[in-house]
Length: 178
Length: 145
Image (cartoon, rainbow over the protein chains, first blue to last red):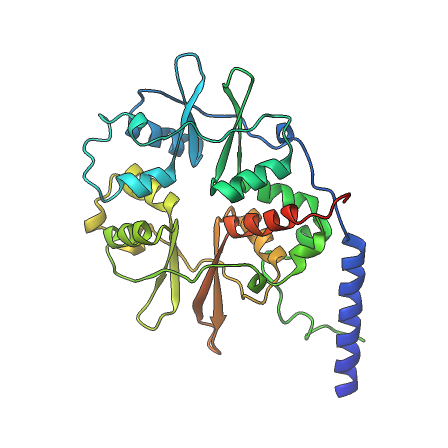
């Protein structure tokens, strides 16, 4: 019996090694144009309550704030709501402008910038969302950490996509046959 | 980037200790703790420290702001997600990535399980932790690769 277990473990290790060698290095570089999502914007002067309604309606966690010429002025996120608004007596959310709590002049990227650039911006700056702007500084898209994670999953099919949603911890032990 | 980096165990990532509140706590306490700790997620445990649920920024946005609930008068159970998916710190990063992708989770609790199958939180991994992990490999990328 002990011998069987040892053989099983050895086979398991060999299978893993083969999978690792097959995966090896993989280029995940793509332009942000291929990754970004259509942008939902908040108009400067919009109330906090309106902005939150936009988050809930469009199921987004952040949105760029734009002026009358659609140029980027800031970014407002659900994180700002948690940090600055909930539990705090800031007043009537329908009367307060989003300008008061947005992050002004956020870091941006262009559609032709590469994924690595976005990952490094997000990691170094602690941002969860990166607005993509055109040459007029108008938002044309948004890349979030979630988009990056989804792209990683798509890029590593043999490593990630074939895995069950949760590890089947005892499946190996219960494996039938030799 | 080398795909093998995702085969490493979660324990190789600099994940966070879990921030917890007890079942029955008002949501105002949850918000205060999240603000103090600078966390976007909190785990809900019972008096034996068993994992009961998870509360995220989005839950607060949807239930408290969207649902017009009063934080002081609302128990955390009202807004939390029950029995969240959890992993072991020894599971691979790929497992966490897969779970986050499929479940649209931003955070996954890391737990140890007792013989009865009860989960006790020992950590929390977020999409940000994985992004930072990937960023380290990008920064250290050897020239020409």
